[in-house]
Image 1 (cartoon, rainbow, N blue to C red):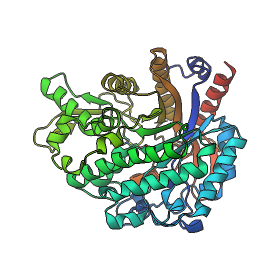
Image 2: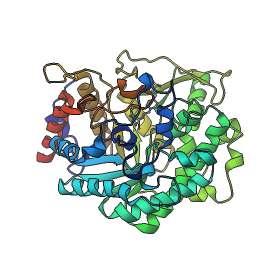
Image 3: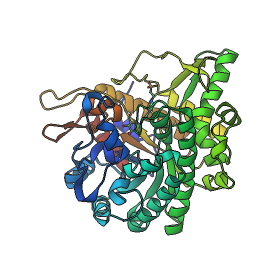
Image 4: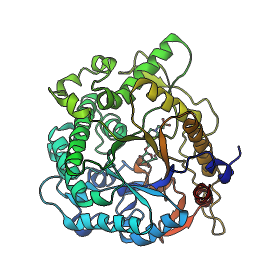
Length: 451
Ligand code: GBH
């Protein structure tokens, strides 16, 4: 595969944005600084056995204390946009009630630093760090959390919105809903379909109320949501497997895309998960179905499924990978999965323009003689960008691409064992070293700027 950054750059229009992405709990550290109180991830990571190696986000990349140096790092890569998330427990340490101005000050400095360097600001309100205090009432399974989120969204938009280029309500509700409430591998670690269905609906409602709160403060601020839409592929052409793939789409994608973009949950989901219907009140679907300016797609790997009548809804089993290449976290490398999911979704729903808000690879190559030769990551990103360029050529309204991630960070249940950064982080010394992939990305952006 030809990874020439100059050739790739030429395939993107001038106004296409190349950025880098992070999330608050994964990089900030400073878990008790300046009035911040715990989130569900602080609690979860401190529970024995939940995160590999007992790792926590207490210090992470210490980004909170190294803001200026990290902004310089982004500028050094030539990043045109930075996608970051805001820690709700810094702004509203109790989830509701008093506003912590000192917490807002940090993001103030971040936004001023981005402006000074000419980098566009893409903010996400929720990347999984729910204030722990809200768990007292049931967290995402409790409707009041949706109103608390809307208030938080309004507060952030009012104070910081003048320097934001875009705002996003949720990052990957699939993860916070299903990994958090059905499989329990993410915070808060619940394992029940009933909890998952409550969390799905309350999260969707929170999105709708959040968008209303953002619009009320700043009607022209481009507003959206980021979804890790699954690229569902049937394991075979058999009728049973193809129907299984349809159910898997409804369960994993339709549960969000349906209410968000069509004002209705998929029929198969309502039937297969009878707990869901009980949470829907009159007017909820209208609230959820707000017009959006854009949406974000996070894509890493396809999901292959086969029929399994014995399993709970959607009655599927994970099918084996088809392609032999895997990243160091074990995910199959399949760039065609990116075009597959985009074409599938634009075929099913009426969608606004989109960004690829995350894409990248776990490549654990370490430092040797002061350099990191992460050729697998470089190749992965180049291949996926090539597919992105094909989508642009086919007139899909793709506006930009964000590499996950700017730097190695706290990879949730995997702790610090899995590295996704364009920049290497030594967690002992907090030294940052730009990897070969980072240098390559810098060349790509520079070439795009000159074209
Ligand atoms: C994103 O989650 C997150 O937004 C980000 O915080 C995180 O660091 C990053 O990606 C890397 O993980 O188990 O083989 O079936 C991505 C979450 C990744 C969840 C793919 C489902 C299926 C892979 N998704 N995963 S597999």
